Image (cartoon, rainbow, N blue to C red):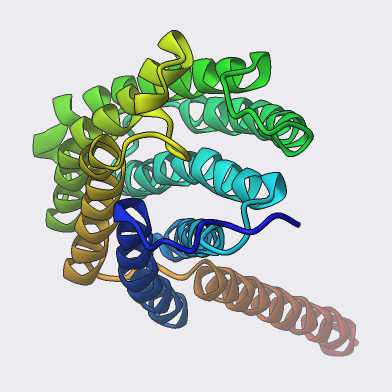
Length: 278
């Protein structure tokens, strides 16, 4: 283990802000889970990634080991996918209310994400074995997939925007939230793509210059998360799946009871008919 320089710098100040704000969003995600609201999982896991990543960044003050920097690298890489799924979850809610797109437009991102996770693991293995965090074939392929994922989300949003007038009030609100978040996500995506294409350390989320990171990563991510949190607070919780299943079971039980009652009455009638004829 190698020691850091012990200096609390600009980038560490950003990490401290990340710890504070994303710990708040983590607590709110737990509140959403208890209240059976949309978005709790994506917001919660994203917040965990950012809290852990910020903790690793602060850890580099006293520990300059490559494994600590690799932890920052992985947390920065994986969090973006959860933002995409948060926006897709909002659009899936709208699609449940008013069917607008085929379900496959929600399946495609899942397939891409599994491939992206595999590439992220490869990138982590490569980064942990080397002191260099320069772009690799794993990270470049990963961000290439993420760019495709972003374009799928934009196309899906466009389909919902075209059908804007058909949605209830709550679904209009979450679609509007997606529309505001997509440009912010584009800024965040551009930050990573610039580095993957050029290799300029200025745009590196781990060891790059703090001001571009602040303006194109931390602030856009923070805005997206808290815009979504605000939207979740303003809409009603979605119908609980378990409750609907229970209602179905109760209706089926009622049908069975009615059917058995009719059958028993029919048997009684059949038994009384011969006695009347005698």
